[in-house]
Amino acid sequence: MNIAGMMKQVQEMQGKMAEMQKRLAEAEVWGQSGGGMVTALMNGKSELKKIKIDPKLADPAEIEMLEDLIVAACADARAKAEAQMASETEKMMGGLQLPPGVKLPF
Image 1 (tube, helix red, strand yellow):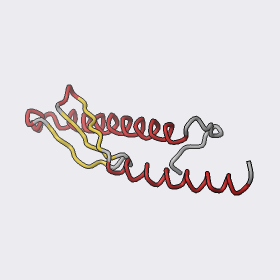
Image 2 (cartoon, rainbow, N blue to C red):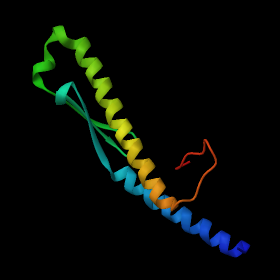
Image 3 (cartoon, rainbow, N blue to C red):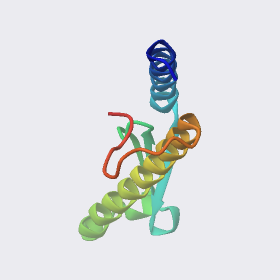
Image 4 (cartoon, one colour):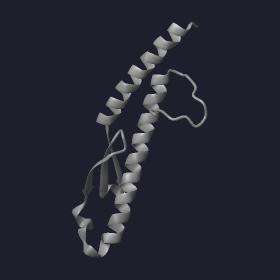
């Protein structure tokens, strides 16, 4: 393959990457804990957007449990967002293998 062809492929890849990042930023993923009593909404960039708490958990005696459930819901949402990003990156790369340890998007 010649240099011009490689440069064209790199430019195409950059365009696809920018498009994927935009789609991921707009994507929304709900995570949950406590059997759905606490849910967290995160975008594809792992930014927490919303927390929903079942009113039954608002008892002041349960604050510590509530805090733990919020952390668990956020972790669940982040894991799902990262899995979605990995899947989209894999589709975009079309089988191109990256060196170990390299993560996209950069």
